[in-house]
Length: 154
Image (cartoon, rainbow, N blue to C red):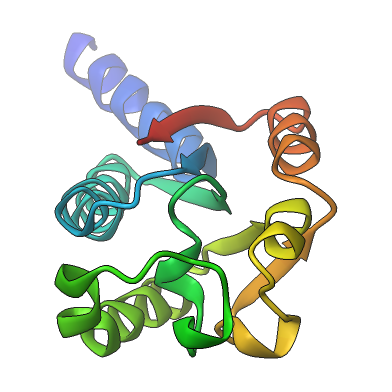
């Protein structure tokens, strides 16, 4: 009888965990290539795999502001973003990885519209998978009110 009860408890736990959705909101402000690669690109894959291993799904939003604009701009020379030799050497590779993250993990990316104007970034000059938010603060507030846990990457 104890064994049957234990099996039922485990089965119920498994079924109840299967539909769990965890929500993460990455406030991406870093301008550092290494930080972007380690904390966002590798971090997303690691965390998504973790939650999948416990029968949960990780729903992710990334809000781009601060120094992070340059990673999502097609042609940085048409903007006021600072040229960064370390990034320029890897720009295409990094942008391909970001596009892959968007597609593989269904991440929603928002860029701060206020910062875009200040840096003279046109909508046509940002990567196709990036949406424009009125401001970073609006995107952060809305996502947190929808239950997303804030994870700063600076």
